[in-house]
Length: 309
Image (cartoon, rainbow, N blue to C red; front, side):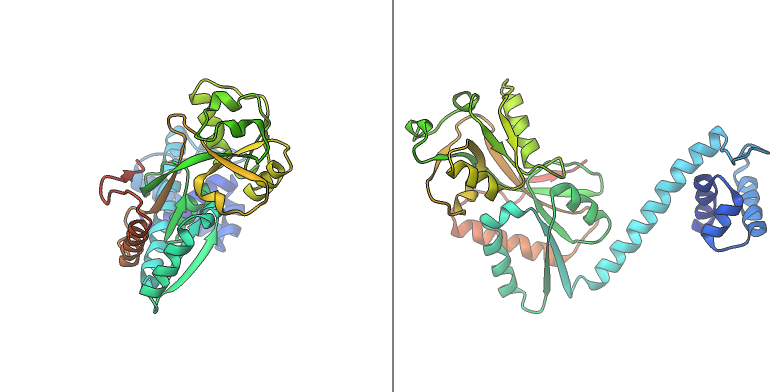
């Protein structure tokens, strides 16, 4: 049994017609029919119900179809990963969530460029979920995100846990909590969360934070991005929870107060393919650690490895 036999079979199942499957595969119908018959003989089972129109699978045929699709997907993934390995010494493509540009990521990438002058480095903004798919499809080599999304083909490394802060107008009544406040202090406020697309995302994480502490806020307002959220806060329309690094966004009349609740953090993960042994990724990790040393950020090189299984 060869991969082309699986492709033929999957095409017939999905098109529910030998004629349409042959057109899709750019072959004539008689050879396609013979290949399916040979496949049934090799397996010793009947894959399709005889005489059915449109073509229907038997119970065992449906079982075989599901596994055939999986095998073909794995084969395509291996093909793309191999192609990526072939160019790994020339290019490293990095996916990242936009909010990390307000933190240490630009400094890390700059240092990495200085240490790897012959390596072409490409950056692509995408959310964490998109990064997982892009890694599996071979479109990027490594991703930086904030969400815990598990996938058996991906391993991730927890780089740090960034404290969360509450952004308020400089004259807001919550400014009395200068040393820090709790979720219970803000539950009745208008709270801007972001973004309002491509879930799960940071807004999903913020909703979960409230629910995990037993709160169901009724004034959560989703907006497009962090800059818009902070602009509305500066207009005294409400407040916003942000990662500490987002304080770098310079808008007048803002004050940032630490959030003191347990688990009031936003993790930062690096994600890569399980089977990828690209040496450039390890070099990138070393740059991360160098920047963390410069910024006096506590980290653990091995204990922060998380298996996505």
